[in-house]
Amino acid sequence: MIEIENVSYKYPDSESYALRDISLRIEKGEAVTLLGPNGCGKSTLLKLINALIFPGSGTYRFGGEEITHKKMQNPVFAGKLHQMVGFVFQQSDSQLFCPDVYDEIAFGPRQMGLPEEEVGRRVNDCIELLSIGSLIHRSPYHLSGGEKRKVAIACVLSMNPEVLVLDEPMNGLDPRMCRWLTGFLKSLNQAGRTVVLTTHNLDLVEELSDRSVLFDENHAIAADLPTGSLQGDIELLKRVNLVDECWRGRN
Image (cartoon, rainbow, N blue to C red; front, side, top):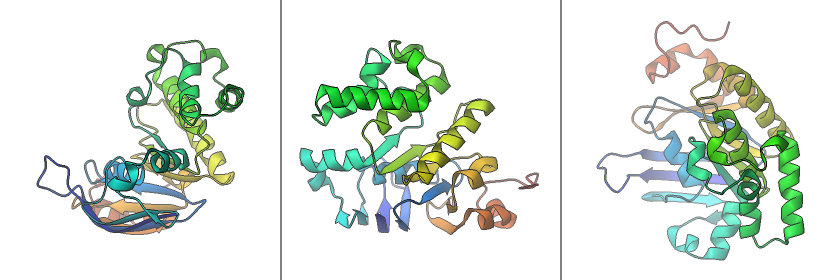
């Protein structure tokens, strides 16, 4: 489904690489976690998968179709891709802008040109799925961090994407909310959705995915392994500065 081949990328205002010669393939229905120290390129790769940025060199294909800046200038092509790939930002405030939660969740389906009856059905399905019925008439700006995260996920799911991409979805959440979100993402993956996410929470990685891709500080892929194998390689995790000498791994 997702094919990234020899991709390198520099941000326009930087002389350093944010991604360096990245090759990665993600199949339909996989759950993949991207790991690595801060600033190693994980979030940049998620932006590339969602076609918010484009390779400086190399190629990115989704479903066999190369994704380029020129193709994304076509609103029909761009709309189809963004319907198929849903992106939940690290900071929920970055994607919440409507006056109330109902309109927030309805925004995507309305942009797809769906009839209002279908829009309402999708909104209500997402509200029920995430148990956020009490929030529908509230302003997103006045919600707690966990509530905002649920609404942001509902906004993405209302588009019925094939791939769910999440940037540090556990960031800022309390332990109870982390447990809920972990179970929710597992259920989505078990239902056939492809899930790609970044996280620093090593205690939850094995529950979230069967496969982990580890980035190093050179913005390259250091390892692509079954999650259990990666979790057990303490020396590798230390070498990329993801853990320190005090980290003992799984008990």
